[in-house]
Image 1: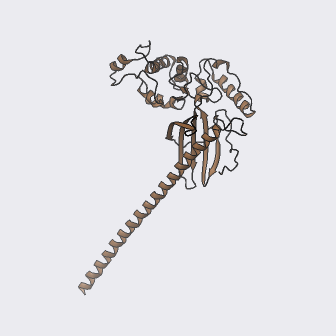
Image 2 (image 1 turned 45 degrees about the vertical axis):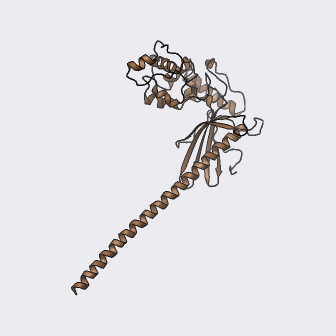
Image 3 (image 1 turned 30 degrees about the horizontal axis):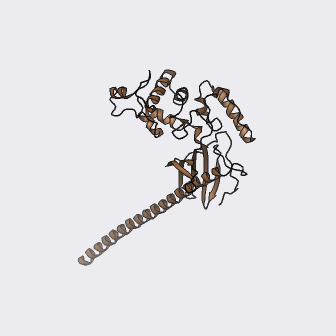
Length: 313
């Protein structure tokens, strides 16, 4: 009788152990299945967003005489590709301030109005930026060349060459991560323009133009929106004389692909059209973006579906 009891207890323990092992295995397999499914969704969303970038580039490259041609003006375009919902925008790169070619007054205005520096600090930082990018070793009155960097204990000196990326701005003497973060969305190294395109530049960039006021810029933005809506020429902004540039032949495109299961992927790219038929566009920047609210257009227009209606291709 005693042996029967021991055998029963052993059988019960064995059953419990097998149940635990089976449960753990089932949980592990479920987790792996979810992980695989999620990886597949991410791959699908990534491929869809990449395809959306290519479609936008194609639309922008169409002849301007084509009906309903897309323009790099920040207008939001939406469509669907299979079960993915796509939102895309494109803006010409001259809507941003090029830190390699912007004039000193424009740099100073940017540092004051976007960076939040006072006039003296903005002037000093603008001169340090110029000393970093110019080809000589001559130090401006408030700037910094190799001697100033060594004196500050830095292990590097200015490159005396154009900035390769906006992130390189972090290496300029006394520049802080917070200041770079505030400036980054208004900067570029790709437009190669000394000024900005008034037709597409956002409010913060326009406020960086010396001699402008918030009231003047707000009035201009409202007039610009009306002009674009009615297909009229962009109004003049007299205060911007000397700081305006034509549209750069470079596009900054952002595409967001959202799947029904909630997976979203954002692709951001800066593309330059090419005359080479085998390589119609050249990617200057290709990176994963961050999800955000639907962007307002540069001209203040509201988002609208494109000419394809549902957008299915």
